[in-house]
Amino acid sequence: MRRTLITMFSCLAVATPVLAAEEAVPNFAEDTLTGDWGGNRSAAAKRGFEFEGLARIDALRNRGAISNGSRHISHLDFKLKMDLEKAAGWNGGSALINVLSDGGWGPNARHVGAQMGVTNVEVGAPTTTRLFQAWLQQSFLDDRLAVLAGLYPIDSEFFTMDSAGVFIGPQYGTPADLAQTRGPSIFNNSAFGLRAKWNITKSVYAMGALLDGIPNDPARPKRTAIRFAKNDGGFAIGELGWLPEADNDKFKGHAKAALGLWGYGTKVNDQRDLDAGGNPLQRSQQGGYILGERSLVNLGGEQERFITAFARYTWTDGDSTPVTNSINLGLHAKGPVASRPDDVLGFAWSRAGMSRKWRDAQAVPADTKSTEDVLEITWRFAVTPWLAIQPNYQQVRNPGGGSTPKARLLGARIDVTL
Image (cartoon, rainbow, N blue to C red):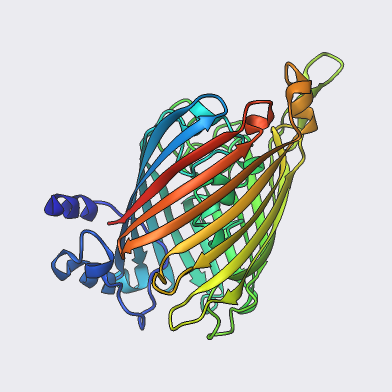
């Protein structure tokens, strides 16, 4: 079995900028299930090729909302990071190819019906295996400027909060108001485009991306395609960020503040308003976000143990999507007890504000609610360096923004680093 896995992984590739020449090669023998492949994996990393693999299973049991029931989802993520300077003498070059395979369906679609979702690996039907990322990047000006071109998901860099990454709820990645628009380039459906990032100072950065307005080919949802159809239009996003502790080598934890704006070049139907002929008015889809995270408490000891708080507010125009704004608040405790320094304990709450126009457009507007609220509590147990088991509890109030009963979900996530 081990030999079969190694052979399969060796045929796949994914890339982002890899380790600097002076940095140590990862300890594959201890930190991954498949090991160092007889030393070949470390040797490849030194030459600029670094493989990453992840197998994930989410199993959730729901009570309330649409129906009681249990569902599970599987997610495989294969990557190869390539430093083209090491591999081919290409100064400042890097590349990435990323293959995803998703299976299972339904915790939210079948049982809960939440606007914000309940697990960030539920992709809906049809599930598929696809090329997710494939790009080249060139850095300039001593790595202060980097320009990327290819299949690129914006949720890999924009509107991210590292301390929120432990949570299973999808709202801590892509905000629900953006995810519901006509075609954002996010998991698991990326678009072709360009991204530029400029490190203005060591702690201040600006980045922007321009991508195809509709990822892949909607008529063939299982395929990966670079297709610029007449009505696709474009999608643009920009972010200005501050990393206040970037120049403090002694700081351990998370510290970030950012402001972002996004919009589409093609208009869509208003979900309520009509013109004189009875046709939906055409509206531009646009929005933005502001976020911050900061490690506030050092839990002591020789290990990196700390408590971090995070917050994010997002908004859209409210003309064409059910969710018009959202709030995310949470606490992330790294090493909550001294004997388990690699565990993470998290508490988070999110609220989605429902669009007035969406509520008016429903068959019985009086049955709708102004908000959907989600509470999530999770503890990620680091069983070994390559195995984590993460019990999870979620409570969803007003799922779907309607009068559906409250949902309570109990389950777990299992992560295996391959």
